[in-house]
Length: 262
Image 1: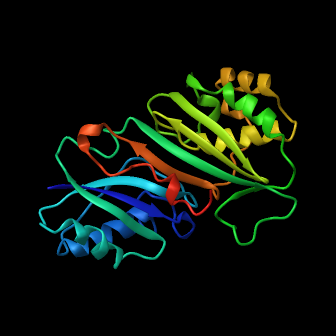
Image 2: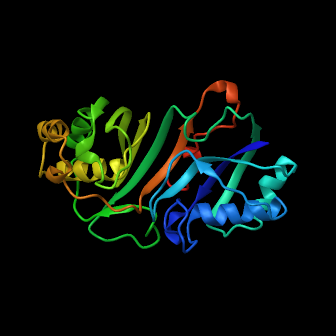
């Protein structure tokens, strides 16, 4: 049978999602716990998308195949009992073999939290990004609008990105300001490696006055990563949802409401 899971994790403790020889990744720890519940049958999960070291997930979606017949509750409560506290399974559903966590998805959503303050965060350290100066949020919103739509996002693509095409459809880029705690909400059909962090880094440049909206348009048109501002820190980045066709009848795949930071 094929099982789909919704999971959340605090990325600070792990070297990213993708399995590594040292074993200290979210995927490694999840596979180990699932294998124990499956009677030590080897389990290999496939995810909607990879996240880097230090990046969090409020709703990652994965699937795996198993011959072990278990009640769905075992794939939630049983697995959670074996996982470190930084990872939790939120829901489990049996799906048919046409479902694929990555290839069946038609959208991904991320949120980035950024504290604009002269003093670095303490209680929120590792959970939010930080910039030490006040930012012009109005200018950032104007520049963000230049990125919406279907474009070649090579200027915001990491050199090690393995995506076949740099062309993506950015459907949402909203910026909310809650007293200096900014939340960037982004939604696209898919994202390039470091794309969100690179967009945030460019918007911070706009916010501090080093670039304007026209400069953002020029940067997008350049399709050249070397001309763009540096990649921003991973700390404030959260995968918040994955969109799938309704016939799969999965529970809510969007979990911004589960974030402690709103």
